[in-house]
Length: 120
Image 1: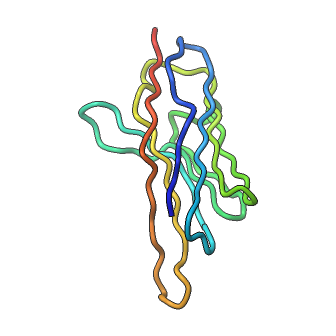
Image 2: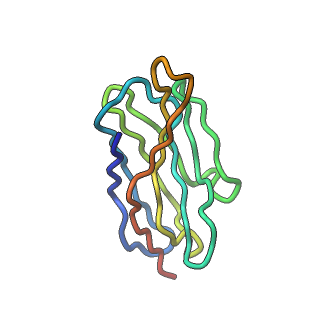
Image 3: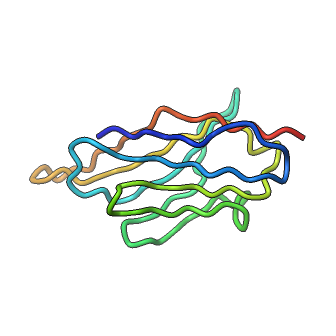
């Protein structure tokens, strides 16, 4: 499975961006999809996740500003980011996991990352 992320860029504080991440390849049943971010010199942190059934989870610092959604038919996850702050500046990575048939395991996949820069 390959994940292709897009939508990053440079925006002023208070602005908005929408990230997209499309999965392709040997897709059987994608379960959870999500977004993580990594700022320079820091660890990769969870931003938001969404289950196959649409249950969402957010990092506290983005609640009320970011919205994660997914299109099951397109195997695509989105992250709408509003009221952006300079501290949101990071490389954003999409993530997905799926159950591998007859194996009893779940494989995890990562996209290549897209840069989001918020200027003050």
